[in-house]
Amino acid sequence: MKSILLITSLVLGSPAAIPAQSLHFEKDSLNQVFLKARQQNKPVLVILAPTTTAASLPVPRSGVPNKSGLSAPAIVAELNKDFLTKEITLGAAESADLSRTYLVARYPTYLYFNPDGSLLYRSTGNYTAEAHYTKDLQAFRQAQADPHNLSYYQAEYQKGNRSVDFLKAYLLKRRELSQRVEPALLDAYVKQLPVKAFGQGAEVKFVLENGPVVGSQAYQLTHSGNKTTDSLYKVLPQPQRVAINNLIIKNTLAQAIATKDRNLATRGANFARNSWTNNYQRGTRAYERNMLTFYQSTQDTTNYLRQAVSFYERYCLNVSADSAAKASAAARTFHQQQAAGHLATSTTRRPAEAQDKAKLLDPRVTYVVTTITTSSPPPSFITELNNAAWAIYQTGTHNREYLLRATLWSKRTVELDPASYHYDTLAHLLYRLQFYQEAEAQQQQAVAHARQEKASIQVYEQELAKMKKRQL
Image (tube, rainbow, N blue to C red; front, side):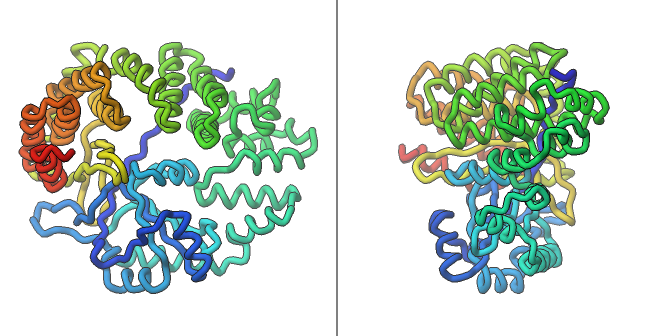
């Protein structure tokens, strides 16, 4: 395999701040909303957000709450009149498929669909300016009026149009909208190419940039002994090589999850491992992380729990004292700046889940706002360990061995970074273990630290009330 480092990039998102009392959200499932859209010939706006409740933007140093431009009367009126709007929170059942299909990496993300369900426009971030959302709506209207929008390409493809020029334009349109290219579409394209095309650098590069799924025809034609691909990997800038590899890994994993194909997941994980040709340890870690994601996403709880314990204890607990001290110091500095009012930070909330108390406690999420500076705790093994502990809780397991392991991890995060979201995770694990009084005490700490962090305490107080009533 090519000598190339695989770098997984984390894009920081921004929680939505939408006044539910003004903007009407559809309560039906997304499939039902799209059915309704076709019946009423109305476009659909899907908002992918990491919060479950309406909130203002972070309070700036002036003490006056900011409001999202999405709450402007003119914007609300247009959306309520002309669109069906569906909010889906990070962690909800429908969010994972949407995130994989539309390659969502920032929150909130706004996906604007035609009534037929084809994506026409997208944007990200939360802004105080009404003009930002006005421009979004104008851009969507322009895309709707475009005779060669995604609806056109999808209709032509369904009619059987398989010309090379058409398929290439279709692929480019999907990439323009950051929409995952289905393996069947990319394979249909390469089938129309003459054999000599796979000796041409520009053509091979185009196929690679669409992220061919490992084992697919497009992948085989660009990787199995293809000297042009080898040459490309030697001359392309590292960021491009990394982007290509990451997209291949991401698309392969997404396809494996969609089809619940463990063999495909393994092939994708092997590709991830082999990308680290000069770092065996990082390659092994990449392999294991991909398989963990597969098990978690396909709800293979048995394999997930067994491998998660091994993975996180090796990579997150087994860190040097120096690394732990540096991570703790960075977190402490961050919280001191928070308390001094120098940072406006997001509130960590749990995603909506219909049947359990699932949430994602990820303090790396930040706001994107036009009027205030935002920040987040520096990513580290502390964050990863907290998320791992929560993931164990999220499986719904009552196996005390796994819960006690996760509790140990959670206590370590509290020791190194006594933040509200870490106390919250610990409290939930203790509650699941039926250590009720200790759970309440830790949840009270979550509330107290949220106040110090100038974050919302509402969610933490609600969870505390449930704990006291034994209704969690």
